[in-house]
Length: 435
Image 1 (cartoon, rainbow, N blue to C red):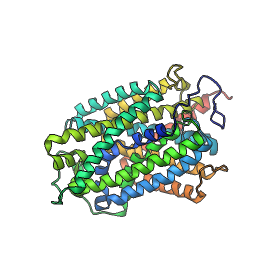
Image 2 (cartoon, rainbow, N blue to C red):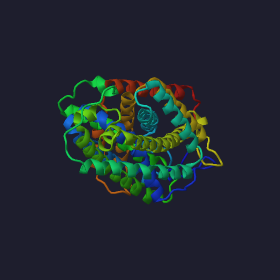
Image 3 (cartoon, one colour):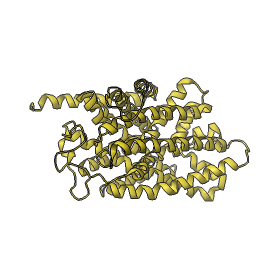
Image 4 (cartoon, helix red, strand yellow):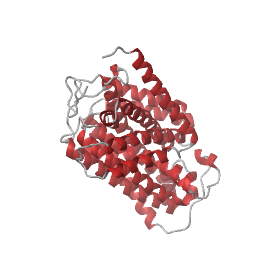
């Protein structure tokens, strides 16, 4: 098992290959994905004209959580993120619940991103879209198996054109004549929501909860504690840099989409950036939105697949997941069994759920994860990253409030998923010989 400094005793150790620029790129690549291309529409369906308030609320909650994550990662620079933080600061059960929330919630995140990619590439054909999404997961799992250096290089190649495409859409939206909002599209998965409801506090909170999954990608940086050089300095800087950039980007994109589409059309669209590009540049340019969505979701999935495997590695080392998941490749320094297992779980989700459901799954699991992370940060005696303790407690309350205002189906299913995890760990503890 890892000691409190994050060092490992033997061949299970990962190599420290990343500096600050690489860590920031990983964070941005993890956050600029399905959220900017799909989740803004889902959130608009709940928040209505108060969408921007939901974006800001989700961003503030993420910033509070990022402070706690940075405080913990500077003290515990090991793979596993809040699983390790919770286990060392609060005990084994808290660590397990955080790790289980991350592994299950982020698996749902990847499924949502893969499905978003497919909706842009093959709109309106559900099962074809699912198979396209599965193909993307298989391909990216293979890339992640090549190692963290290749993962970062691929992320750079993906993120730069995505940001260029979004910048083009934003500029065109902001300088275009204001001719009024477009009419709502038909055939959208959001049609089942009916007419757009009036904005309410509950709707704003629910929208913020759905959007939170988009901002939570900075957790990927924390899960790389064993792979970052000078982690006490690099991880906090990378977390705040990546999150700050992404929050500003999401606010600007939300403003641009509302200006072009109007709130009702935005709320009814499964692919709002594609709708906006069609209006701004004409149908012949829709390929630009397709390319942007495909690249953005690819980058996010690539980094999150790698992040899940690192948390799975940490849990397997401590016996909270099957110990076979802790196998690390000597050639690539990748937890390859955990990586392959994560890919299989995502494929199962793609075959059995839809995009709104998996976004809710993801947000609930990750919000529980961060609630434990905030509570763990509250107990720190060594506070390398400045921040008052009341901010950590505020993070706990905010995470739980957003978690339990998500769509009830997502909440119930994820509560059941947590119950299965807890029951499984109880059975393991009962049958495992005492150390």
